[in-house]
Length: 320
Image 1 (cartoon, rainbow, N blue to C red):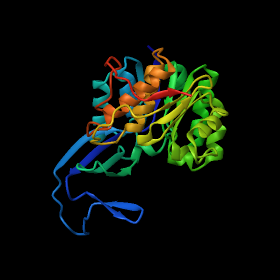
Image 2: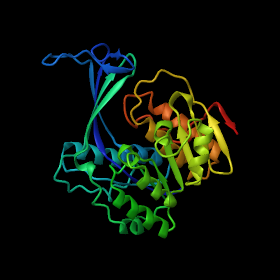
Image 3: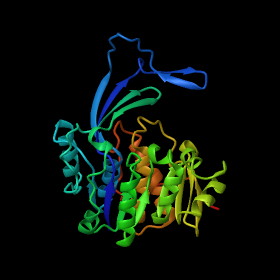
Image 4: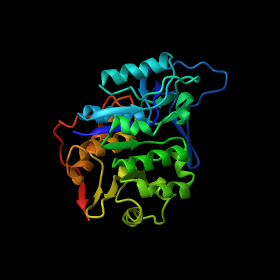
C-alpha cells in the first residue's frame, strides 16, 4: 500500500432532513428548495451530525482501503474540531499535520435535504478551513508521502504552487480536484497543470478550462496538459484517459440516492485509492464509481466509503 497525504477542508456537517417542507419547487429553469416563509417555525423530521470536507472525505476512503493516510487541514479546538479529531482517530488517519490553532471556529456545512427527492442545498461557513497559510512545505519531507491528493484550497494559488513544486522536486505524485475558487481563474489553474499527474473535474468545470462540448474532445484537450485526466458527467457517467487508454463509463448502479454529499470526493479518492494500490486504470475507474454510489446511499459525506475488498459487479465501461 501507499502513503497518501490528503490536503483539504475538515468540516462539521449538520443534515436537516425533512420529507415535505424542503421539497424542491421549479421556477422556470431553476428550482428553490422548500416553501419556508420568513418568520415561520418548521418542524424538521431529523437532524444528523457528521464530519466532512474534501480533505476528510478523501482521507476516509484512503484509510479504509488500507493506505497509510495523513490529513493536512485546519480546525479549531472547539466541539466541531473535536468531532473531526475523533473521526480521524476512528478511521486510523494520522492527524499530526492538522493545525488546531485557528482563532476562528471549525468550519461547518448545514445541508438542507429533502428525503423524498434527495434534493439538497448546502450552507457553508468555512471558518478555520478558509485559509491554508498554515501549510509548511517542509511537511512533505517529514510525511514522505507517495501521493498527495489535493482538494480545493479556496483559491490560494500561492500555497498550491508551493505544495505542487515541492512535491515534484521530492518525487511525489499529485492528484488534484480543484474547486470553484480555482476554476474561477482558469489561467492560474492551467499554469499549475505542469506539476499534476492526475486531474479530476466534472464536465461543467472542464468547460471552463478547455474548449469543446463532447467528452471525447474535452478529454483530449485535458490530456495535452495532464497525463491522466478524468471528467465526470453525473448520471451520464464520464470519461477518463491516461494517454494510453481511454474509457467511457456509465454509473455503477442506478439506485435511489439518499444524499449526494461527498460523492465527488468519493469518486476521486476512490480512483486513487485503487490505483495507488497497484490496480489497473480500468478497475480503478470501476471502484471509483462503486465508491461514489455507496457514499450516496447514506446520509453522510463519507460513512458509505468502501474498503476495496468488496466484490464488485460489472458496470458499463468501454475502451475507446
